[in-house]
Image (tube, rainbow over all chains, first blue to last red):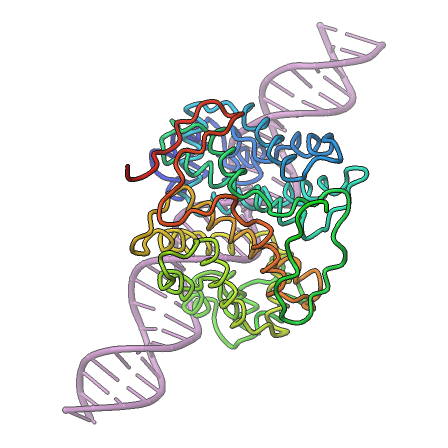
Length: 199
Length: 199
DNA sequence: TCAATATACGACACCGAGTGACAGGCTCGA
DNA sequence: TCGAGCCTGTCACTCGGTGTCGTATATTGA
């Protein structure tokens, strides 16, 4: 497997020719299976999570968006089987800048979709900025949890970490039903911010 | 300037040879000034923010870490002059996957430093996971603000957006001095998370 | 069984990013 | 004038990635 070569010699130090040859292929054939060298690592890791987008869309419209993200991601994490291979893959990704960048890149369109899904629920009116903010924050949580899980050599309870992070960053004002209006901030003002949910 | 060529023909469609030739240089000399092609874009944009790390460290130890991040980043944003060039650079970065990935990569070590700085203040005892979480969330805020600012063609008030985002994601439990102990979440069940630090 | 077709792979050439090595020039101080 | 140091061009090379073409091996249909 390519993963073995990568973990043994490092990602950048292993050429595609070597991977291909180890698999009994040509470089050209390698690129018929993987669009890029990095994708030989992501093969076993689900980074797109298309189900997440649909799960978000299926959530009740009156649910707090942050809670929706929490529940869906919690369910999604549960399905990930954290094998030894997954651990090795994540470790490699974490320790290789180009791989980490690629992961972020692969998650970019996913974030867009999730953000749209949050707003697309019928009856929901959520500010684009808020939706993007919540989504990016959730992605940051995923990253942090993964990182911590790796730091613990796979012994940490991912679900517990996730819960903790979501509880920790719980938005102050739960927007629900409609947005607070067009947020025209006068030049430098701060302070137009928090309104306790539902007065 | 290289930026003009990029915006005109696209980043991937512009060769280093072309940039170099337009600047009266050789490809070899180009790489003596920029470590990579992408860095010809980041030249005008401060992405590392070394001052941020020091500013964090200079914050009072009894200040809420989230508030520290908020104040420091607010101050930092103020110093960024949002010229037409910056707008063009950011637009290019946003629309080019490889550039966006590179930005994230460049910010990786910065995030580590900020996270460490949060914990390094004398008298502060902050969980590594919490520190990383807050830092990543703050980075997510920066990203979201930048993205929204770009969407508004540079007319949005960045400081106001930043304030709004920081207020919105304000951590539920403000840790200060010491952590609040294990966060046993009801749904999670197993809570082997972390020790309250200093009994 | 035989032929037509599709699929997969190897072989080769090619491009662009990035690096190493070497050979001049240029300036500045002795 | 000489040499040290620096900047730059030139050449050659590696590696990731792609386009093209030829060919072998299945697969299908009669």
